[in-house]
Image (spheres, rainbow, N blue to C red):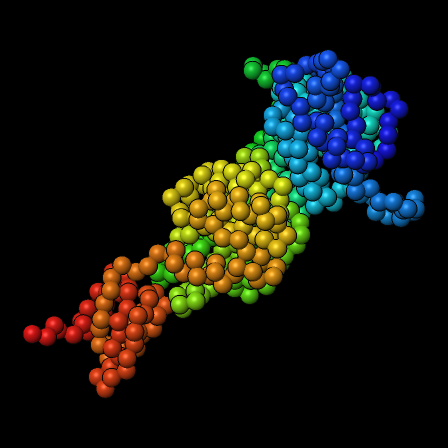
Length: 497
């Protein structure tokens, strides 16, 4: 990161040297507004009010390429971005983690992160998100670094977006727009693309910029205009909004039709009494890797945020031979835009309709508890509160043992695994087998060989306890659901006196 001579004295910038010490300095008591010596002893590293309100440089975010010639740079033409966050609560480490996640999102979208700053405020400024004075300082950072985009760690109102752009003189986007851009790049299926397009239109609708009556499409008042036709007609921005609303209505109808197809498949699985397991979790927690490890599905795995957007459903088998389906779902993220939750509701219903949720969390993340809370918030939004949950702490091979112990103590139904090495996978399979709902009726029947389909159904839909081939037929002892029990009832041997 470069240094700025124009930066004011009350603005802290994080240098690469000794970042741990500087981060420790930033963990200050909120209510202390002075720093002085008492009886010759220092009373800790405490900042005065102006220091606490200053923009604070976040270390380790720059992904700027070094030793790149101008020709190579013009071939790359990546968007060069500066990140800015508002730290309203929590510790300085929490604020840094939040901006680091924004940096990972920006890189996933194909941007080049040049710098990152955090502003300490009680709440974001209503006009420019970070305040007018800090917006001017941000403009200096943008000029100094040569950035062409500013990304804000939060959702900006249309007014904040316009006001900040007017100050910094480059494009400004917020966290929501960035996530929508990533989704647009990664969507592959027809349904995924439609859901992303709907979310983008919902986001853009209140943010259209128009220039008033100068863009009127229809002007009344001419000769022969008649009553009630004088004055400005529909403006350009009104036309755009009407067209967007029409497209949104069409998109919702298309998604509803696709949802019907998904529901038919789901009902077919339920009719066949095949239990379903949904893999849910924070983005990049390793859900697709776990699906591949459990089923050998060969689903795309990338070390990138939101690599999976289209749900994948695969058949799997427990160690005892019970069949079930395993669904990989879209990853969640802290402050997932409301538009996306709504647009992807039909996809996320795989979670709500499942018999068991494998909630995957990255054990090597600095704050896995926050990831768990963010995912559970979305799970509540899609109405899956009553579905049993197993917390799968992934990447155990790279996690801090103390973090693993803490998570397993807090989460009673949890298991530590590594999808990469295979550690804990057998134990997880046994746990799935134990947690899946079991057929309620235990039955013993002598099934004639001419009705072999009933025996096959007992294997696929139920749980076979024992099976013996006799001259009269197959003596079957199994746990089955009520429907199959009724079909097997004619072959239940009469009780002996």
